[in-house]
Length: 330
Ligand code: ASP
Image (cartoon, rainbow, N blue to C red):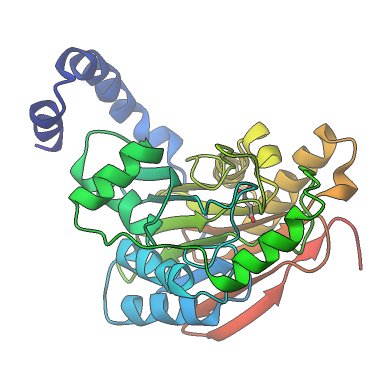
């Protein structure tokens, strides 16, 4: 049914028919690749990068009312997108070096459906536009002017995202205009969120204004499915924050989910994800990367390069912020 709808709407008939054979073959293999060894616990849970209690509380409220993990992660990260005091996400995000606030976001659900927007301007809720891309188009990702046009067509309001606080900081930065594509642990904090609902289904979302004072047109890991976020409902999910270029190079979130598939715990998988980056990066001391992960059983983990990264978790056991273990010890 879904596939027929896709063919009808997309006009990509022959490519999809060709893909149909592959899809059929994959379904045959599905039982073998989807191994869940961990014991499934009852009850919803949400985790997010950084200490974002408003976001996790919003998401848990939805889960607790028997809402879906997809609704929970979308509405959870929307809290940060709307919060102008968070200068790395949504409205109030730090601009690129030319003074333009450009947003990147993605979302992925239990059925491996996904949507993303990159270089989106003047729309606060990039994650919701990403969800619309997933639900209303035959595509996964829309960029720049096309993404904005789509958002406006979907009824999203247009507004200036550059707040006075972020403008003033940017003007100050411009005095020296030192373009150093070296991210430090102060100037970035993407919100990545993963949730399991009361049906046991997993979804994830990731949203950011990206690296402060980045080059115009630069895209990081956050809207790239597999890099900034990945979910496989049979195994678990992972999401990233930090210097996106390095996460893209190792397809970090996909790697972590695959490591969990092979039997690693979320904590072990996040640690291996960070180690892979360090192994390929000479000056790894200059960057921060943080990963969080959750498995089908509701076990969680987080790991980073430098101390200072933490993740918020809300479940029936409580609402806690956990400082992640780090490769470089405090
Ligand atoms: N991952 C984001 C990016 O590279 C930055 C961040 O987490 O702050 O765009």
